[in-house]
Length: 592
Image (cartoon, rainbow, N blue to C red; front, top):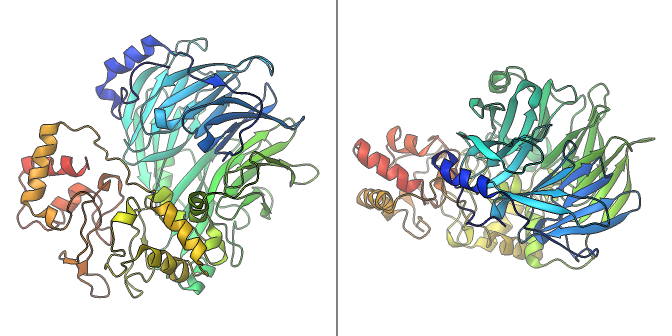
């Protein structure tokens, strides 16, 4: 393993070129150990990659930290490697015969080369930096792009030849949002990056790593993106939460509250198109009343023009072709999150994270589930695992339109407004709050009317999601919510003197009266000088932990950034701050 801590390449690689270069000179050394051929008892598959050279499916084993290889023909499964922390992304590179596996907790990208089934695969690792969530590799294997979520960055790397694993960083670009997913349009030198929470995308020049532009759209949860077979259109999975919709069953049933979509947009003039053009939709609707498609996740286009979309919240796979009407939906497993495709055998594979299974989809003579491969021994999951599964289960809502995750994306927040009666009435939509440290930051709701988290869970299921709850469901969700933490701040390593100067401004302005450490909140209600549509003036202050990662601030999202909050809206500030105090306060807020 490369010596040095994973913070060597911190979130701002542009300020650490020397450290990055030293890492590249040190090189990549083996850091994985081979396991025996018996799979461990539990797996939660998180990503898939089809190896066209070995004709096998590679599986990222999630919490188990295993990299698995499945031979669909012989129906045999073997454990190749085990890592200390989970894998989140894997890709098979035809040009080099490598499998690339991303281990985000340690900031490592592993290069695995399998010689044959009997031999020991070789592996080397590259330290790519913290908060990494996804990557792209050029067709020739010489250029690498990595996305770093909480530092809002994308980094472009290169190597001299495929025989060398010594990538060096070309450029790191600051993004105007936290990224999650990407698509590489290599022929147009276009690296497309999607937001982790809101509806923003950006394009980066694949040759230089320069940010070309970005645009925003009133959607959220862009979970995956893929180019159509011709490369002319970009297709994304996403959701749309309507602030004017209520959480009454009628609004939920007809999609007036939440919509689930797979949508397309031309790649030519992409940023301009994204800002204003109408999105393309499949020939037939993805969902309808009584048959919602909660939480669309992974997307894949086959060489025959079929588009596959996993519906993670309802445990289904959707399939359509642009030149045919009709939307085929079939059950797979719980929380399908990833796809892979074997063009030679005309088979696709679906990773069902909460079932611990892989569904094989055969296209001929008609699309169907032809086999289910079980990775787990069947046993009762822990209450924590039950809670996580329920959090991502859209069947917990009326007719499967949305899950807890739909609004509280990955335990954070989608940046949208919702009118869910938590303030005692309809007609005053409010920001979806993040759930980091939620168990320690009561009371709950913007008006502070909820004082028991278990009761808040019950009310959310019964009056927001409009389904029947149970004590077992509520206890499991509570166990999961108690594990959620606030995201790290954008400025993770401020100078102690700068942090202290900002803290003093924070205290001198009286911010600490409502936002007191350690969670930077308070149990009371305060008049913040704003009134909602129902005449409410007193609000419970939200926690400021991870506030730099939020999309929109205040109960109605009117402040688009921390700077706007302090300068444009003068939030709880009687006189404008001079530039020195303003910058000190902003640094402090961006570092907690």
